[in-house]
Image 1: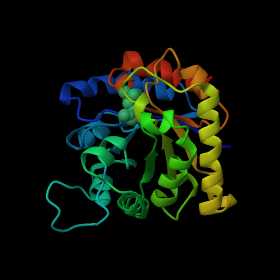
Image 2: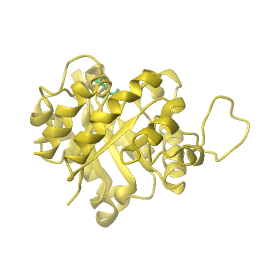
Image 3: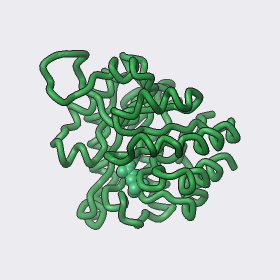
Amino acid sequence: MRRRLIAGNWKMNGSRSSLAELDAIAAAAEAAPGVDVAICPPFTLIERAVARQPGLAIGGQDCHAATKGAHTGCIAATMLVEAGASMVIVGHSERRADQHETDTEVKAKAEAAIAAGLIAIVCCGETAETHRAGETKTVVSSQLRGSLPVAGGDALVVAYEPIWAIGTGLTPTADDVAAVHKTIRGVLVEQLGAERADGVRILYGGSVTAGNAAELLAVPDVDGALVGGASLTAEAFVPIIAAAAR
Ligand code: PEP
């Protein structure tokens, strides 16, 4: 039985004062013992976040595939571990678009993250154009075949995030989410084998809010959520944790 994971992605938002939000988020996580809860703040806040709420899982939003070297502005997975992080998001669509990250690079980052002892949240998702063309399953499957690390199990999490749903208030239908998650589960089995695929959690991400979390989390094969905007305040995030606990 896979434990649900509700992970918040603060993106390039937040400052030291935002860490006060973690107090109520950590309390909600404690009140939901069957749910794993994580917050991925900007790199500069990781160490302070861990110090403020040591019981809450804190993650990074990216890592480099190398352990060190001449990579100005980048951060190694081992550095995230040293800062106290326990997970990292790799291959988010914003990085695939802004930093032109390829599937091969995402795979290398995920491998490095897992080798460093982190949980790797590997993101995938289709554009609005692909969605309209009815090619979502083909495109997501291909992205995953290129991006998945060879390790599986509970060190690996896949986040299905339709790009057109991120930050827009739009979400796919429950049937569409179910169909894509079923496809992803099939790709995991094909790529990793049934045993290693079994522990891999598949999150849905894209405009998850207090209002739609219960419905989305009830979809078959949805093991949790990756939440952007609604993770920035405890007021918006705590009801999503509560929905996962039910
Ligand atoms: C995200 O970017 O990972 C995300 C899911 O954002 P939002 O919840 O704001 O749509």
